[in-house]
Length: 117
Image (tube, rainbow, N blue to C red):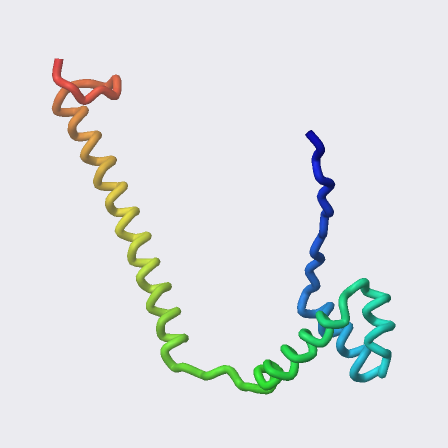
């Protein structure tokens, strides 16, 4: 039985910085798309898609992040609650240690077993 040959296609992934650098060469340095596509081994359609995404999402680069007074307060609350939880864990561990020690004393065992024989 014959096997049909498979064509392996590898998709390269470009980081946002790499995409921007390629687009910058075209838009600012006026290098032709065909030259850039040959140089970076990409399809011209892909470069046009990147360009479209850049212009559609470009406003985000100039937008100021919304400032929320709750962000700092939430972080402070989380830190306070984590500290409180650590204190309770330490207190519980100390109480358990005392409990085990008392049980050993009452049962008269020092070998670590708590069962009554």
